[in-house]
Amino acid sequence: MHGAAQIDTFSDSHVAAQIGNDFSNGHRGMARAIKGAKKFVRSRVRAKAKMKMKQIEKEIDSLDD
Image (tube, rainbow, N blue to C red):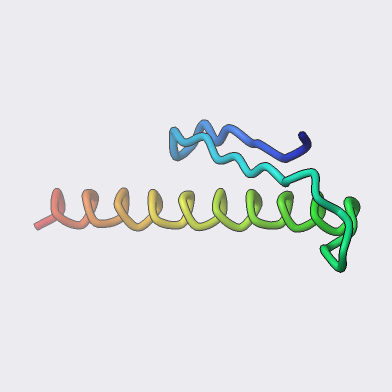
C-alpha cells in the first residue's frame, strides 16, 4: 500500500493519505493516485497552518485590547 504523509511542526499536526491497490477495471492509475494523495496532504497542511495563523492573530489582538 502506498500513500503520503507529512508532519507540520508549526501547527502540531500529522496528515496522512493512503491509496488502495485496485488499479484495474477503470480505476485511476497508480501514479495518479499517489499524486492525488500528495496533493491532498499538501493542501490539508496549508489549511491547518492558515488556521493556526488566524488563531495566533486572534490571541495577539485580544492581548492588545
